[in-house]
Image 1 (tube, rainbow, N blue to C red):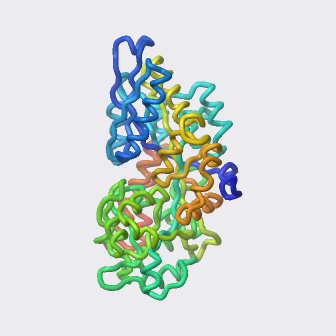
Image 2 (cartoon, one colour; image 1 turned 135 degrees about the vertical axis):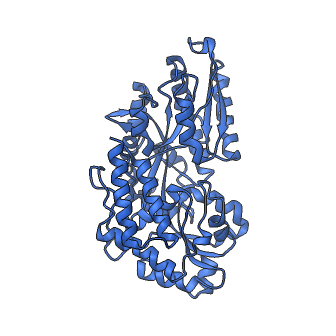
Image 3 (spheres, helix red, strand yellow; image 1 turned 90 degrees about the vertical axis):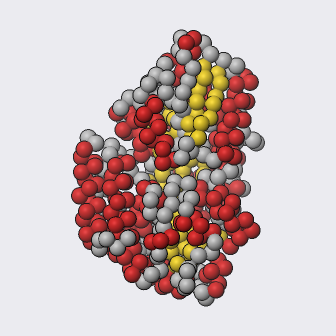
Length: 438
């Protein structure tokens, strides 16, 4: 495995949230330890659902008393589905979560601590930072699966047409190139509105690359009124004032469906800052045109000294409200799904599913098994960027704090507030969200 991949094991990369939940289960004898039916709730698309169903069937062939069903919902409904259905013993048995949700799910009794054999497997076979993100209060609460981070994506054909020879390395070049790429109905740099992580993570990646941070070191208050944060907000304001960023092209949901994706796919956006999992949506939408897509580090700001992307990870957990027998069956299936014998050529079935979407797996043996795939032109810069990534904080109140920052960034993008006011309002609302969650 290349050094850039091995470096993952030394990182404190930790923020995670995953997507699979389980709704519904059989009652009766299953609760007493007999046959168990587990529903795996996910926001994945049809191709990945099929792969997960196949893994469930393979597991059931050797464990006939345990069956797995898959139910897909939009990502935006995932946490609410978990909260509304998971409180019942007959609710989700397995839930894939974004790690940032974990502190509140543990507090509310919805996340079950992993049994000792699963916890030992996680600490032995996953990077320490990723394992820490799947833990709370010193206990492991799930099995990590993916890590995501952001890079600058750009259209090489549009760069050539604008006479731009290389991607921007700093903010001055970013502003200059965005202006050069803006012509007619074409915008230079696209941003997202309408989806919290899609709004917040690119902004925080630029902030991290400007030497700033979202929260203070102990995660109890925002750092959004810092000079670095205000400079980042002013960058947004500058791009919009130059008409290099068009708010009309910004709308997206968690699957990137909408004008944001359409604009880039159709060659009407020159650059965006987006996560590695977006590769599959681009390939599907662009066909042969995907060959014109290139990736590069986040441009460095005037107060920064290196590029640093926000990173976040995901895990699959077991519902703490499920019966003991159902929890046991769920951990058995998850150990198989994430183990090296369930996929192809030493890979886990989970890693095979993730790589089908351009998502980076995190288990050490999966990184080895997929080393060649991770060195593609699209993904290689993401893998290299792991070394300097800034983990999204996993703290109580984190989801509400994200929503608070989203609202103010959208107000800035839509011209409703200036940069300084947006950051002052965001700091106030983020602090309130963090305090109320304690």
